[in-house]
Length: 78
Image (cartoon, rainbow, N blue to C red):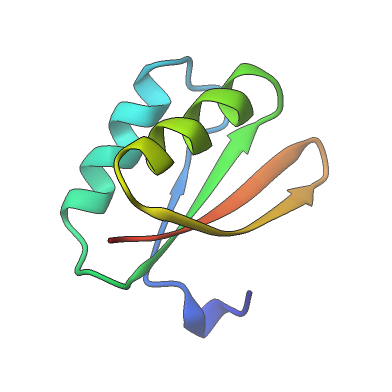
């Protein structure tokens, strides 16, 4: 996903569950529908829990990419 397609970014590496989802949710609340949020997460529990919780809130994961030891997920706000 290119830089100009992303409307917001949040780096949550080193942030524990469930705080990383809370921060993601708060950031999404400041955005408009159909905007894209790039979230950088650690592998493991954050990558299992944050995408699942985002989907439960009816947002859409449009892309996931591995970035070194981390992941970037792109969320389209519903």
